[in-house]
Image (cartoon, rainbow, N blue to C red; front, top):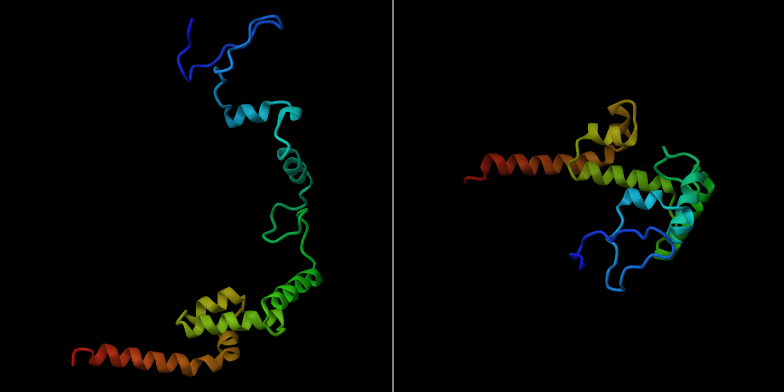
Length: 154
């Protein structure tokens, strides 16, 4: 009796039973049924992924090595220097990027309180003292905005 397209193919009851015709393919397996399959029948790509998941050291890390352990600062800095070299930029310290990010955020009008929290400073005075050189730019921008708000109708 012909089967409707998409209908499940009944499993053979014994090894001597007739197999489905070549055009009658079983429906795709659900994700849960794929997990229930024996390991040998899983795709070759899944085995290394499952091995890696079983050997992952700390799932709580945001940045980790390929096995889930913390990145050693020396290796991190070595990678950073290599990226800078490949980009054709002059060598800078990693801390200089932190300073640049804070200066740009303040110059873009991000409130000092937000920058303080991003940097992890305990007090806003620390942030404002370190990045005081950005204050004149912010003051000019504030004056320009005030001027625009007061005299924009003229």
